[in-house]
Length: 323
Image (cartoon, rainbow, N blue to C red):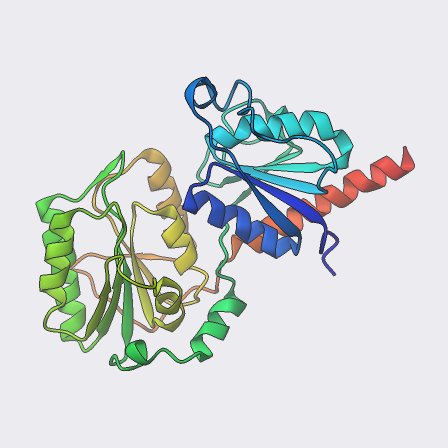
């Protein structure tokens, strides 16, 4: 039994897809009945976040939810107000470092590579998401003719792109293309997805590198096959600029290789080093062999976070009763 199953929940977010995937993953692992409370902060409220007041259109009044999960810098003022007004009626959770006092919520989750720690802080190796091992197993049984027409082994390649601390140099692009060539010549086919951050030069190089081999290249047109790729891949390659994509790949129980473009940061290095240390990922380099005969057990952080929330919520409920 899930102690919060069916309970009312608010998911307070900044509207970013990556943040909402994390909040939804935890909510579904809890089994709560959730509603979205998206914060469209602008002007002074946006500038002052995570401090300052929430936007005037944030309705913070009863009936209070049993639990509220907040994520995103501009969502934090709304979570803080709810935490204060609802009191013990609502158990509040902040996902990611809220960059404020620990008193902003009853519980704060951060990934292990984040430095924040405290009495009400929990950590997991990877971030939460919706791709449970059970969902991926179900997707494997569903027909996907275009994917199933590809020769096995099938390699999923999930490419991110330029970000604050990452860039794809000409050398990086050549190395990625060389890795594709080596894997393809060994008999693999490819399922490739890019993001809005993927530079045009990377798109061009990918199309050229993939041309001799069976492949599907999704660049944003039509229905996104990302979930089907994740489920039906025999091996997954992700670029190191996306913590989320790496975490999602690790729910598959398939071999996961990480390709690192130029740049990065100490926080990213801690994340990827921790994954390598436990044998969950390996580096993708054109000079290193790529093998299909290994994998780490599926890692699904949303369940770990949900169980920690349930335990804290139950402990508080017992305290309220005894008080």
